[in-house]
Amino acid sequence: MRYAQGGGLTDVERTARERLRLQAVERFESGQKNAEIAVVLRISVRSVERWRGGAAVEGLAGETSAQ
Image (cartoon, rainbow, N blue to C red; front, side):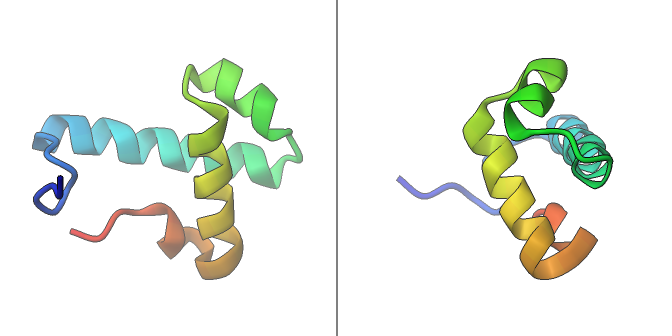
């Protein structure tokens, strides 16, 4: 099933997700491991891996969802 752009999230939920992604980027830059970031931010390791991959390929712009 495909979701509308934004993954079916409300504006508030989308803002919260973006805030988490930015916090993750800060932690990438400080050298934290994916598992540590996942525990601290209370998200899955897989999400952290995807976000880190986006940051490596696209920089900070890779951390924000297409809207």
